[in-house]
Image (cartoon, rainbow, N blue to C red; front, side, top):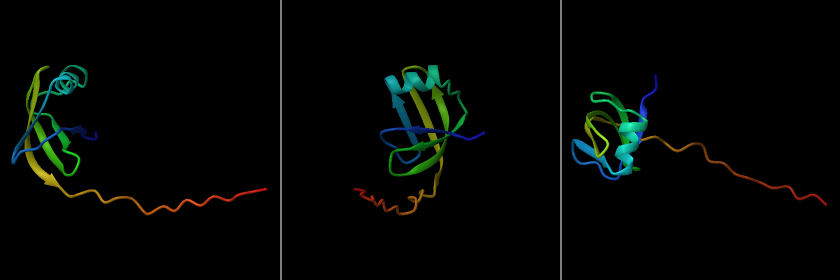
Amino acid sequence: MALRRVFVDHVDDQEAHAEGPTAHHLARVVRLCEGEEVELSDGRRLFLAHVAKADFRRVEFVIDQELPAISSGPEVTLQIAVFQ
């Protein structure tokens, strides 16, 4: 099964967290459990992490390792043909 990808605002050296509506969504809707592995991203980097604590107010993650950056896809050129 593929890992869930979670986006957070800030990642410290070895930990990260989500609060507020994001934490509520992760804990109550997605139902993340303690010990569950996730891919964690701050928008620039990607990490492998696991859930240290999950409740509806705050979800805490512990960083296990930084994953290699995802390269962008191939360059695409769009051309339009005009008909009369």
